[in-house]
Length: 166
Image (cartoon, rainbow, N blue to C red; front, side):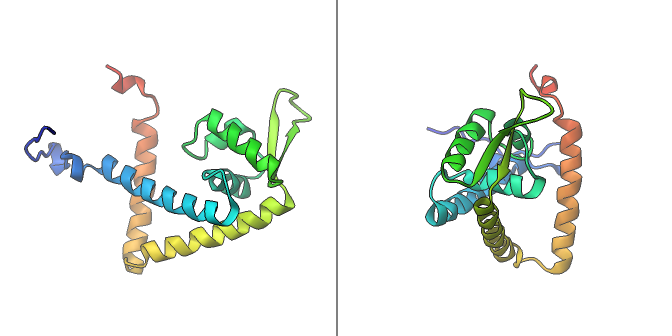
């Protein structure tokens, strides 16, 4: 039996009830979006389902190490490594030892990977359009501003987990 609590609000009318909590709602929304993109990616290009995340990061930020790829998404390094292995087998990315730092391995898109990246970006663009069309132009601009402010605040508040570990 689930415990039921009274609806709560914190200071400044911040909603703390689970179903109203921003973290919870962002998490559910991000999960929906990631699953939809992952399903479409698998249908069009095969496994791994999170391959699109690595391809879009490489397409946007250029050749990177696996560690650098993790800085641009929520995937853990071991998962990135497995995805890269699969993408190498499919001929979508290459791995090369960094000529300046022999310990570092650089992952880059192949020509085929670049073509698929462009297709993925088009698909995600269509999804984003379909998702945000419910908002007016002004509301979208407000949303973009709010997301930027929340990202900056998140960088300040969540920089280290130590504060929340007690």
